[in-house]
Length: 241
Image 1 (cartoon, rainbow, N blue to C red):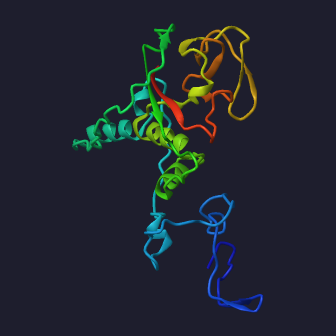
Image 2 (image 1 turned 180 degrees about the horizontal axis):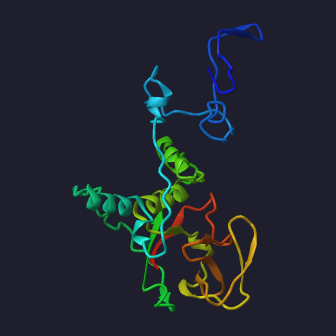
Image 3 (image 1 turned 60 degrees about the horizontal axis):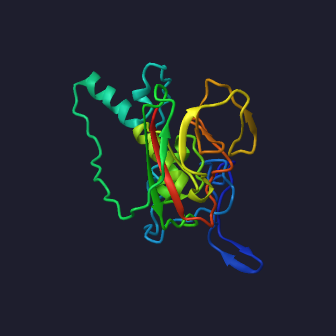
């Protein structure tokens, strides 16, 4: 039985027997996404209840974080507070450092040191941005109100949700000279990822190259430096604001 009291039953379609129906997320009442059917991984066990497979019997907690608790902008920060309040140990995921396999670098210059005391970047190559994001990651992003875009964007958003650490990936070919972290010039224009043009104020922290602003730091990426599917080289940047 689907939402709207629509019952799936055996029927004939164009004279051929049909025992079921291929569904989209919207048809199952999971989300508003109706762009095609749900494609499960090849190793998904046949016959498994889709609710159990996608772990849909879940609870969502909405938390309003005050400006003085930026440490709670990620799941780890919330878990830390809950652990302290209940006198329980905090189980932090174990993360193994990934050794660099490239010698490629790009220059970073931090001018607005009070607003951004530290900025880190790393060049990543050989990414297939046409690959599919794993379904489990798409589901976790969806439940947090984030739409899946492509593997690169999805990974940076996933890290943001878990650690509370803003991240962004730039198209390396579209950066002129290097990264500059600075305050915006009054009235400086920036075309955002959604195509709208923002007129920046001088108290706005931006990530720029040597010619123009690329992004509003920690808020919105710019259209010019966005990833293109033809490109597979990115400086992935992390900053402390």
